[in-house]
Image 1 (spheres, rainbow, N blue to C red):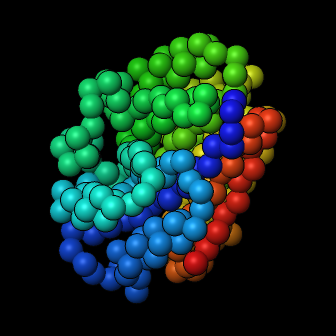
Image 2: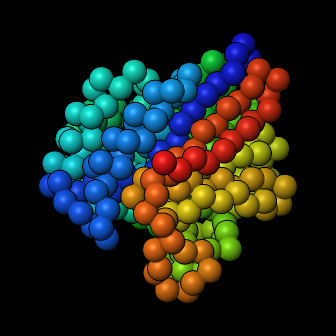
Length: 248
Ligand SMILES: [Fe+2]
């Protein structure tokens, strides 16, 4: 490791096909405001961790996002969420074949000597092929890796999302992560809240949405706030990972 690796995670931006308000939120304006705020940080990478589209991976939404990022000074990667469409992501963002595992957007990146793994849980599951891939990737190195996935791989004390919208094969996925000595930090979105949960000595970091946050105490869908949030991740040269959530 040669220097601090600094990553911004931006999640659940939910851009609609046309400029419109949903739940009294201007998603385009909130996403752009976050991008502006990010310019103040010495970032190495921007991670868009799924649910780029409002509902079902609309191509005009992806085209708009891509356009906004053309002049963004930092490289970015995209992930798929349950409101995305893989074929449309591939088409608009020119996803290369090597970033796919089966029909899933699943890939590794090396940055400043560190390994980052990006998984695809868009169908509410981590596919069997990705489970095999993940185990192979984790076995390749004894060095620490960071894992990014849209759905948290365990329940996280968020009533509505845990009950109605959690990952469907936690019982298959969690043991892979829990038993990997080189996984300490897992970065997720999907739950529309900012939260850090400890499970089996690992940290599951949930990054808030740039659209709106969901109340974690209610068993029904209740908007907790319309503040756009995002996460900063700093992986120092000594190996320490520090992370913090910010709201505009
Ligand atoms: Fe989601």
